[in-house]
Image (cartoon, rainbow, N blue to C red; front, side):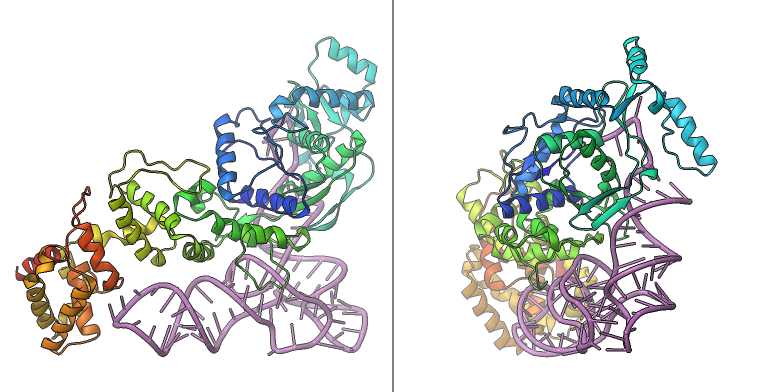
Length: 513
RNA sequence: GGCGCUAUCGUCUAGGGGUUAGGACGGAAGAUUCUCAAUCUUCAAACCCGGGUUCGAUUCCCGGUAGCGCUACCA
């Protein structure tokens, strides 16, 4: 099996899914996985994208047995390093009369195509240069005339088998004699892919179905070369919500984007596996990479296009957030707090292919932020939402709380003023609160006293108090929240975290105005 | 335009000549919690259309329609 991306951009979810299916099949069959870089398009290929590709693949948890970074028996694995090979086999085809030299100029061909189209004919190559005597052609080339090399397409229909789509047949009348080597000496994609797949002993070509229509050309090439035709499996396209091909304007589409959003690699892999594949029975949804390897089969791939559903990815991400080790979730979570500038950390970095970011943080800070992550992670779809969710810890604003439309109802309850009054007094009188040492137990005791003194309970009691503490009537449990606020008020942070007492104080002041 | 591929709830899918057409996400309702999230329970929600084959088609075949792809000296 092979994954053969072009280094022309970041790894896209479509390509990632192709890579994943190749990998799953290779590992399931105990086959060999090859990474090959298709960089014959010199204009668009860039070396830095190759690194990015390798990192993204590693981050997803995929690896390979042969590739440009690790070598292998069929090296080199970068097409730009294999040009001699392509030329050699192209010449061989010419000598065997399976290909021929074509002296038609680009402009000339374009005109022919336009004319054919205007007359309602197929814009396929006329085959004009097929008729040139091979010896004559060689003389012209030696004399310095520019020429490309074209494959002679056979006179019979081209058939091949696809594991996903079944038997496919193309009439030879719609396939032009394709150019395999340009007049500048550079080979074209449809040719190199065949040379490489054959020479690298690829038995199963698993790729996007945008290549399905190219396959007859490639099959003709295998036959001309006298090499066995591999099995094909063409994967359906991944679409955006508007049923158009997924592209950048649909938002996050590169693997790196998802990592930066705090989507866990296992969640993304699991989601991608379910796009176009389902286990037998179709009931199970959650699969680890190892379980996927065990269950995967090409026969169960769906031929129809699939719409990428962000919501389902988020759901899976939440499942994995719950099952990942808390310290790992905390590491990623803290990284987002660092990024948001909520904690000072100069050497924070997330090495590209790594599951977890690395940074040095004092023990106090690490523990404190870990508690915040543990408290809030169940509330988020992606870990990058954590700083926003924690905003009430860092950005307490009593004035805003009093004027928030969301709070209007609770603020207007007749019992609320009594609750406010008693609660404020209790906190201001409390010694541990004034030291910023309020415990969950002590806080609970105060609430119970307020409850006893005002006769207010339940919602009517908790909502106003929650507004005083967090600025909002809904939020996490006080039991966990109070110690976090108190501890935070003693830490050295870019922005001071207010203790419970400081919050009450600010609220009282704002309310008096 | 030509050729190719595809078509089951809004979405991802299971299934397959006779089924109450199954699961999941999302949605709705309820339970629980001080609240939100989570969790649990329940509900709504689909076989593109038309022919043919058949006792019977959502399933098989043909056609239509729609979507997507390919039609380059791009990959």
